[in-house]
Image 1 (cartoon, rainbow, N blue to C red):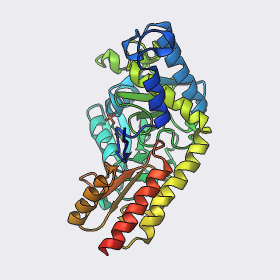
Image 2 (cartoon, rainbow, N blue to C red):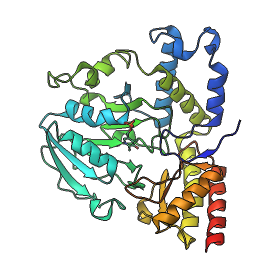
Image 3 (cartoon, rainbow, N blue to C red):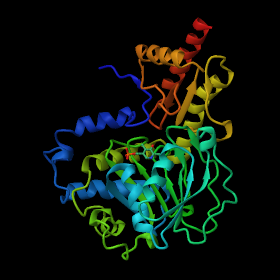
Image 4 (cartoon, helix red, strand yellow):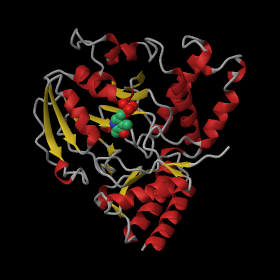
Length: 360
Ligand SMILES: *Cc1c(COP(=O)(O)O)cnc(C)c1O
């Protein structure tokens, strides 16, 4: 067996101890005589899996009792439409657009009401976060929407926007569980899990109970109603049992490491290894304003598309995979989620240092 350092933006690297546990339980889960992927979602065994997963997530994030945790299929993208469909009261939605994902979400919301882009960083290719302390929040806005960590552009909010009393909705897909989070600051926190937690095909939605409405429009499909999932404890239909099981393992693993404060310390230290290198490098340069750069997704460039491609090829040959940047930013991108060991980042920096010396 040989595993590479996988810097993919998602689906992304998983903690090795979790993969090993899953491997050990694959054929016979805790004496049930079957794999989790073979068992009924109505079975006692699976009920314990999903209950424990929810409880461990609640413990990790200190989720207050007036918030529901929902496990919904369709990934983060389905939430782009579920959110406006379910939160629509006045039909006015305020979006802060700081990158590709918030832009996509805003575009989708237009199908369900009037979308105001109340702030945007598009003018500098989303390399910064606009000042969100005094935005023209619409009096009728049903919510204010952000993508808290833009996976492609590599920015992250250091301070939540002033929503002037309106409900804050945050896409945390690429930063989920990477640091402590004060859930009460939000109406909805959600994320696709394949960036920082588990396998693809599952979104976790943490939603304040008063936002789970029964008076949503009649034509909203039953599966796309939050109240459907809330009333049935995420078991209205067959959920993504496998992903819920794996996420549950990751929650336990994060708890064993000391929870989200500990993860934040690890992540800060890990990202600093790469940013410190980029800050002094003459060949490589980060693409994001320093004060808002992400601890999870680190885009950087050489300034020449040709050289970028050469570096990507060289890294791959050396056992560092998936470093090619997204086409909208170019260059390289290292996604260094919770599960990327600091040794992986140190080894990458060593490699880039040597590459720079040899090609100076
Ligand atoms: C990856 C990603 C998405 C899309 O997730 P899917 O599960 O593929 O739908 C949405 N938002 C952010 C911030 C992401 O990183």
